[in-house]
Length: 519
Image (cartoon, rainbow, N blue to C red; front, side, top):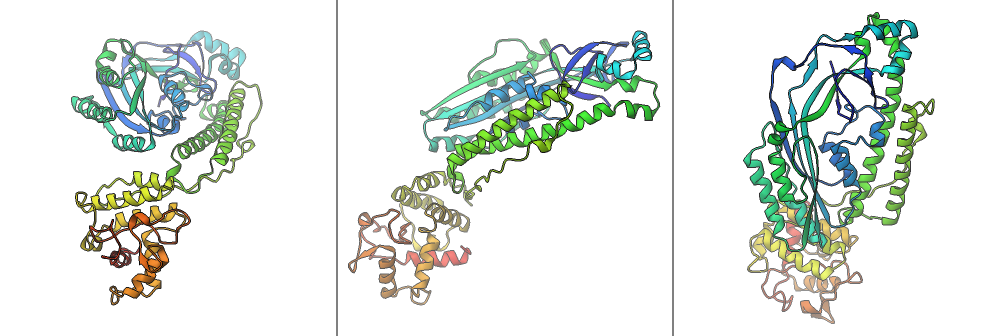
């Protein structure tokens, strides 16, 4: 079976190729025609539009993998449009940027060489100089066929002016759009709708960077033009296709050696392949670690106990090791060094913070603003946002408060998310579950929910009473020095902003609901 490799400049049918170094050699085979596989003709076109968060994810989306490109050029950069897009993307680190990729791949039916054999002159050379010398002169493989087509890549950066807008951008781009074998008007309409939704925000700037192999026409730099170019790209490629990939076969398939001899003459290549495979995998592991650190630094509110200084130091160490791994791989493939071992590059210990709370909602409520306010320790702002989102969950945004029936039937999934956010960002000091624990410790139960003594002691405990009097909401001082359980404030009354005295049984209903939800 032929090996499919990405095309590099200079590759042509029948030419020799060394997959370890990426070097291209002269033609040493004779052949007949170049014919379509199976006698078929045709073209496939695949389109993908997806939000991406790291250069490693972009590599994955574009299908950049080791199996298809086993050579040192990957440690140097392959020079393909895909590698160029990934390289440029990795240099972007704007704090409030959201990225997506628009990728179209057009592929024609492969064409293969027919009636291939070693040329008489090279057979004579082998007999005189040996097979090892032949491999040094001709490479290990020859190009047995080509796949024409084209690739269009556009990386789109949406730059927001604040974190809240960035989170909205992320939500707009969260779902993936992909079409196989056809780039339809439906795809265009759906992606265009996404762009239209993004354009409604006045505090964002959208930039597009485009790359192309095959096809005619100038590259563009706006998302709208990029979309038009991507959707029309298959027609453009039909008029001006390029070599997209090559099919390679090992020379030993053409040699009349016994099977055992073939195995022996390939041992050197296999040994180097294994070493290079190990280096590549280590390179990928380091790259993924770097991408993970970059994501955490850009989104600290999603993680627990982020130490920026430690992460930046670790990132610098990883980048140094990645450069060393790549340099050793290049030297090894060029025979500048005799051996290299992956164990020479041990993993750099870097304890990454665990991802924080998953913002789950049974009704699709967005809790990113609440998370951001809590992360910023804006306790009063977070308290107001808590009432707003809870009112939205039960469709009482116009009323601006919840009644006790709403609390008794409040979504367990949403209640857990809200409570976890408060508990996490207050280091366990605030939250509904904290208030429940305090209420129950004072003897609060279903039977005595109207007991004024318990309510008074609860108010004293959480700082809602002072000198025997209930405070107005505006008089409550909410900061990290406030008593345990001081926030959030929730009440079953529209008179919340006047006084707590009218109805403080919301704590009882919340405590009951928390028990039912196992929170």
